[in-house]
Image 1 (tube, rainbow, N blue to C red):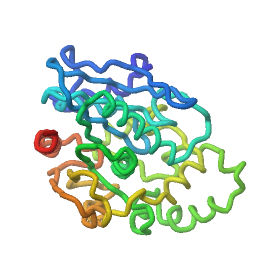
Image 2: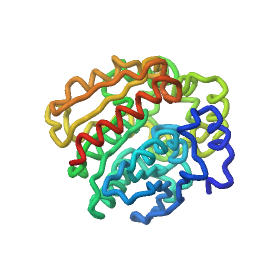
Image 3: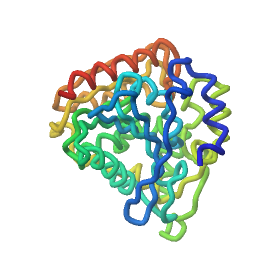
Image 4: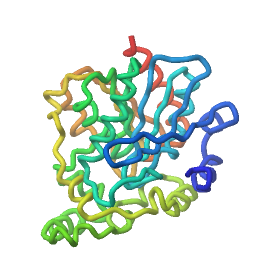
Length: 307
């Protein structure tokens, strides 16, 4: 699986040393059976046994291994970390057709496994994984806290405008795709053709690497999956969300989805909310000091609410 994938290894050199996979902190690749799928995930375990787990979700164009830069500092802080490949990405295996609801079901399954083990469990979502993690909390319910770098309500046109490759795609293209017969919607298209992938990371060197990753940003996705994501409705409206506290740690220089776009939804959440702006960080927040601020804010939040 990822032992033969060189992209994530090449990305490592662009990360601060304290966020890199090392001889001391290595993920163990595992597989969990769910329905007719085999969910591949990375599991990180701290030196001292912990009763707290953080399940981290990637977004469109990601995979579990690319989340290592977030996982490593959390493991150093003493927490278990789980980073799954969502269906369609990484090395998770399953039926060729799935929609956004499958992502939510798989996410809830991975979180509930940790809860059933008796672990205090937190959901963490990067990029489009933010709204996914929110929906997972709505479904799993017993989550201790939610950490997100973005939370995008695709019902809003302004959110679609930022997420899509251009305004033609966001305003006309989606309607055209929605009118296609179901058999045509099964066709897969490169992610970069429909999404604003050039804005996923501010480093040009890292962007070139990610777009080459056939199990990440260089992959393809079915038209039906894209439509199901763009037309999805949160399982609980933010005004009624009282399941757990929420931390939005938003990149300051996010060229895909600026802070104000995420705050359209975040500011409506009724439960306890914390906000941290990650200075100098892009959508894939690997820059300093924003990455260090993400590490610190996440550890403080988890420590505060895992009692």
